[in-house]
Amino acid sequence: MYVYKEIIILDDPQQINLNHPLPFLKGKQVEILVIAEDETDYVLQNKVLMQQINLSEQTHRQQTVEDLEDAKIIQERANGPFIEVCLETL
Image 1 (cartoon, helix red, strand yellow):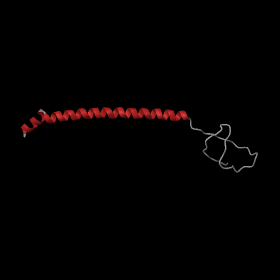
Image 2: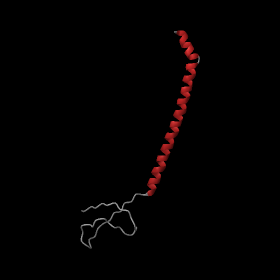
Image 3: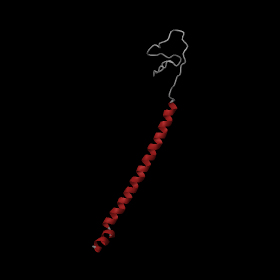
Image 4: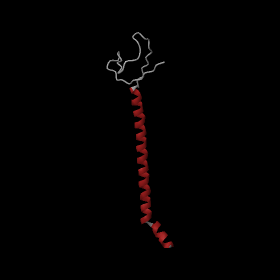
């Protein structure tokens, strides 16, 4: 069995032009297998990727809000009664 692989861009969907001749005599029967990636795969992959990016951004924004709330609480405790009580016990 002889296997030949070449990636080409079609100029005419009814004609395939190879860059190199195959090592067969004229009239030889061959089986041709054509594999093309479906462009809808890329669309679906991009859609899934965009959903993942959006979810990541939402998670990051939520975490940022929580971090800011925590920082506010820490700041309030640092400037409020929390520090005063601790200092009185020393």
